[in-house]
Amino acid sequence: MPGFYSEQRSLSAGISLSRDLAQHIFMRGTKNGVVVVAEKPMDVLSTTKKQWHTLTRQVERERASTLKLARIAELTNQIAWMQEVQFTSKLESILQENSITFATVEDLLLQAPICSTLYITRGVTAEQFRLMTSWMPENSVVITYSLKSRR
Image (tube, rainbow, N blue to C red; front, top):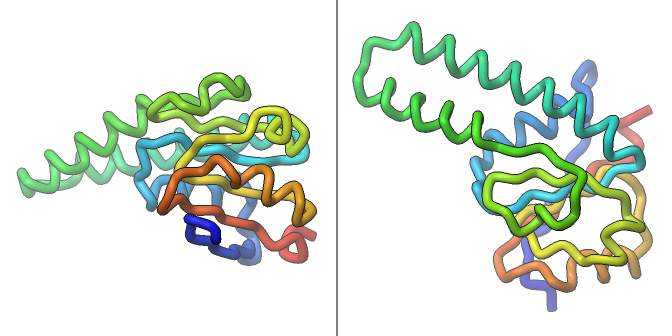
């Protein structure tokens, strides 16, 4: 019996995978390890990182226009977290706090991810899915993107 929550996502018209990833990671606000499975990890990493910086600037603008002290403090903490997030393709960083690791299925079959959030952005077999999620802790989240929406 899996100890994780599974979610299916599809992309809305005009929303890129990297934008959706950045927004979803931001909304979840997870500080534990995040792993993104991609066909071309470096491409997805660079575009998602760019979207992350755009989100950071939006939060900074919101903080600059806010007068409520409690909201300013909240946004300041959020910005600090967003600036600490590391984007990487090095598998040894999976266990690091505030890291988002991008990898291929083949990479993750050699070293199963021990992360609290796993994004699957390409097709995987049932066996590959089982192997990738076998070391995930209880109450983890696996988000699978619908392939139909990416055409």
